[in-house]
Image 1 (cartoon, one colour):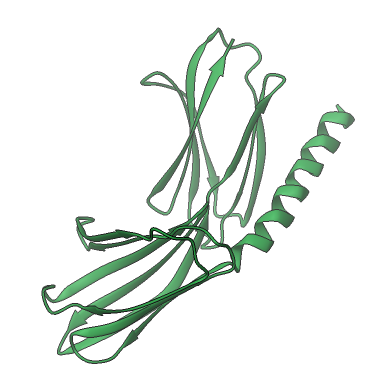
Image 2: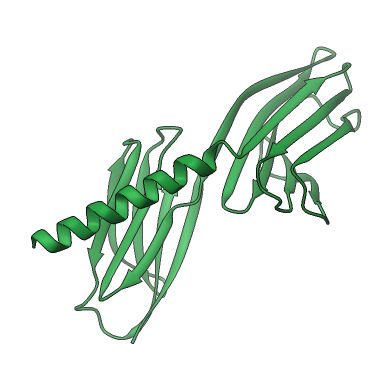
Length: 196
């Protein structure tokens, strides 16, 4: 039992350290120039392609762009004159990091909200154990769901802890295809598991 605990703690520590180095890699700024235009400035410490999207407050996609060449800096003036007054979310994905900024158009201004960064959880399945680690930077409610096809097999409310590390013993499950899901802040992160 001590060996399993030591391995789990070592796994948690390594995932935690790697994540801390990655989190500062993606910064997103929206700098209003006028009531209709703003500079979107994105900086990244990695040379990864960027996926940039804007959604309205109903979650409908109003803009999407994927950079074709990796780069560490992106700057572009966006014209928001075609958007109706309301709240929007600018999301930038680079590798396993997502940074979001909400902004609101109204009263002939563009108001920009706080930056919010999310890092995809780390999953691994070996020797009958599903291990996962998640850094909950935004202190949102985190839940774990485990499905056998479409049937919920297990669920657990994890809470708002910053550092989530856990393992599930799956050694007694029959062969088949399963999916583990970590849900946090309106996002779901899926990990398929093939047990043979």
